[in-house]
Length: 60
Image 1 (cartoon, helix red, strand yellow):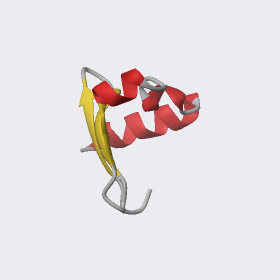
Image 2: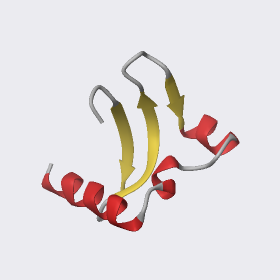
Image 3: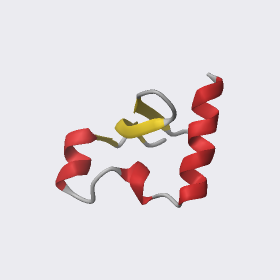
Image 4: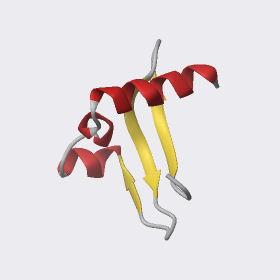
């Protein structure tokens, strides 16, 4: 999304989890705060959305 910054943990293929995320207005969340609330936000995406992100990461 425009203006978002995401730091992810990658092992082998694709993203395993979000380490930190920052919104355009400066709010942040990290792995520990995600775990305390809803869990890994990456796992909340649809399978095709997860696959699309993983394919982008593999090209980096």
